[in-house]
Image (cartoon, rainbow, N blue to C red; front, side):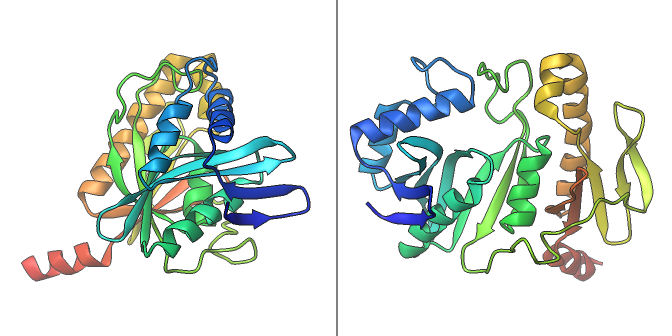
Length: 269
């Protein structure tokens, strides 16, 4: 077993044994509110992925999993993180364990997807880890029936994490993005009647609801209107060459136009 991170109470390690993988499958069931008889990632699937060269990492708070992730090797020195979840405060340790495993095999990037309406996950991925949103996927999984996503459309944002670059930390400005009301022209209005998207000279800003999971449970129709509204902004922005590069504490994405796109447009002109 390879330790990814160790504290006084928590250990992060790779998992290979059947019992350990079954415990991880149970943990994923608890996170996604599915019966343990129908986990989103069954133990036998996890075992097959490990046997094929992938890795399952788990964070243990005592004997029980308190976080877990699954990754597989991809082409051209890349890896793909199939799933990751952790109790509050342990996500960073789990992702760093994944990063160390992938980098040790020569991988230079890691990709995964997440629900772009979940602002706390966007902040973790973009601001804390330093990944970049590189692809917007409309209804990626089709209908989902777990206790978290049921009743919604499964749009996802793909992020790409440069494993060769240093990651931001709590004390860097790139992580400590303050609450802000971004300037620029309002281009879209949100379902709550307030600005949804603003456009400046070099950036786009797009807002997401405070807690989409709670909103989806309380008012699925309103949550779906938010889904469609944010989708419209992101699809248009990505077609123009913007990428998601930041998330503020109060739920505003920053989308930045890539240098490559600006250069190619200049050449074409």
